[in-house]
Amino acid sequence: MEPLISNLISYKELLAFLKEKKKDVNWFNTLRTRHKFIHKPIIKPSHMLSLKEMDAIGKQGRAVFYLTDLKPYLEEIIRLHDQEDFTYKQIQGKILDRTKKLERLREIHLLDDIRLKQVEFFYDFEIAKAKIKEYLGWNDNSKELSLLDHIYETRSKYGKKYHFLTIEVKNSIKERLHPKHEGLIKEREEIGKNIDYCNYIMDSTIRYCAKLIKEKKITIKESEMEEVRANVDKNLE
Image (tube, rainbow, N blue to C red):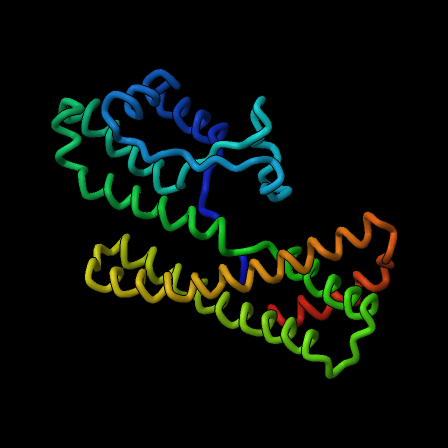
């Protein structure tokens, strides 16, 4: 079922975590810039945020996130430095595998953001398809409608498989099953390319419908949206 749980913490939540550990933002920035311990942040513009994530928006109209796996990673750095008296250079060598793992997980998450869609995307596509059918006078057996139906069915099938493989890839990275995750990544990318194509067609359909609405050529009733939501929710179960 889409979308994947994001497994992210906001920068605001991260600062609260650092405060609990008696560390500040300067300490974190030193780890990030000088010692290269910290994976690149995941930046989301405001229009990509879920309602739950809206509180994370900064002054620039975007939100900064890190992987939740960063928290135990930072705890280990603190333990090695403050309790075991290792230098940060020594710590770099000791946790190199964990550092690389976080970087790989971060790359996987970025692909999820692009390819995995919120359920509203499917609502919008289905209502757009119905309204375009009505506007252009397609019948139920028209080739155009059959094509869009096929795209939706294909996208749903690939989306479920991609979701499953993403979880498998993340688990294999965490468990250090390198040969396994390399094969999974290759399979996942092949499916991802098909998802990219389906997403493009679906997004274009939604945009065309939005254009018709803006030009006042069609309207959408709330009752129509409710019916679409019910049908999509049933298919995603």
